[in-house]
Length: 285
Image (cartoon, rainbow, N blue to C red):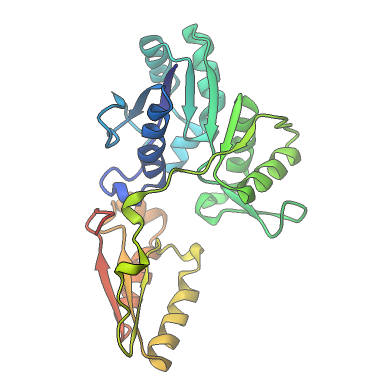
């Protein structure tokens, strides 16, 4: 089976901070292990040499990825690769992918991998849908949600990573009049062995605990709450904290959209008992 995995990479200079690339780097080899002939169409190749590579240009912003995935380039790619299955990493691009397949004259199944949900629910889906602040610049959150639902409708298979994601996706689809039927499947990403360590190899420090906060520092992820907690911990307990700087120097375009990571990092760096460290783009580090 020929599988074409379409991957937009928004953080090509900081791949370890790009969730879509991380998932593809794990899933493409797993698909190869299952017997598929896999090609990743992306600005950068994944790490497994068995996975074929087709160079593409990713949309320059997170909103272009959702609203302007580049139909002309998709038609050319489909005619060249003749896939039997197309994996849409950006679920909102699925309607354009389906239309491009029709124009290219290629009959392929479209599978959408919902690695990122641009919404949430306070419960399993019976309450009010909450738009993701990261996708609501200029009030675009509702449009992103509708584009997500349109992508679900255009897919033959919809893959999510957890039971919570399945319940949220089902609820969001139903509210938009999209019946997922039997096409929704839970497919957790393969375990990343680089991030697993045997607890027997770890020696706890004597008299003082050290915590590591390894999360992106956007304000809408609750970083201000963490900063308040960090101050309390280092002041009231024998605790020292290391905060990972996962982004490094971001592009001016990304800073202009949301400067909160830089502000949060600066505030944490001035807190006694808190150290800032970088993984330097190395997940093993």
